[in-house]
Structure formats: C-alpha cells, structure tokens
Length: 114
Image (cartoon, rainbow, N blue to C red; front, top):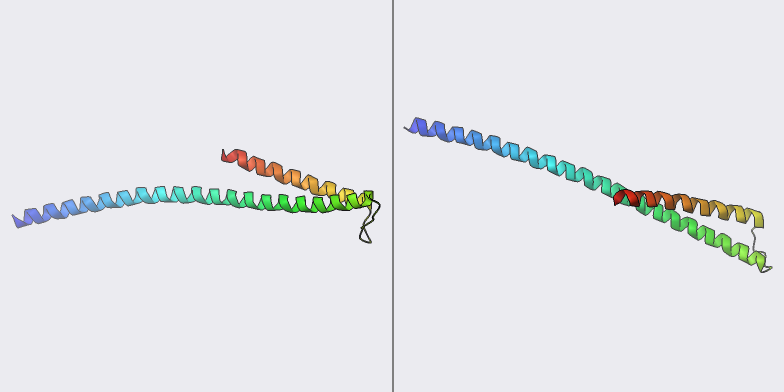
C-alpha cells in the first residue's frame, strides 16, 4: 500500500512541477513582451525630449537673430565684426528651417503614438 501511495504522490508531484514550469514560461514570455514595449515607449519619449530641446534651442537662436535684425532697423548696428545683415538673415532662415524639420519629426512621432 505504501509503495502505491508513494508512487502516486511522486507522479502527482511531477505533474505539478511540469504545470508550474509551464506557467512560469508563459509569465516570462508576457514579461519579456511588456519589457520590450516599455523599452520602445521609453525610446520614443527620449526622442520626443531630444527633439523638443532642439526646437527650443533653434527657437532661441532664431529669436537672437531676430533681435539683431531689429537693432539694424533701428539704426543701431550691433553686429559682431564678421556679421552682416545678410549673414544674420541666412542664419535665421537656417535656424527656422531646422526648427521646422524637427517639428515635423516630432509630429510624425506623435502621430505614430496615437
């Protein structure tokens, strides 16, 4: 009798062990998927932060260029020795173009998230 009961208990323990391992595999698979999704979302958030910082930086630079051009219109030349009104305009156009490019990238990322 004890031999039969012992074998039955051992068999049930093996079944329980197989069941437990199967459940762990499923849970680990789900966890891996969630971590991958979280990593992708974190990368997107980092991209958004970087693009926002670039947009702000170029916006500030364009504002400085605009102030220099306004000073020229007032008759006060506040140029550096190697600056001209035309070079300031070109620099400002470049800065605005960069802002537009980064804004478009930011909008593309935002559309993908929705």
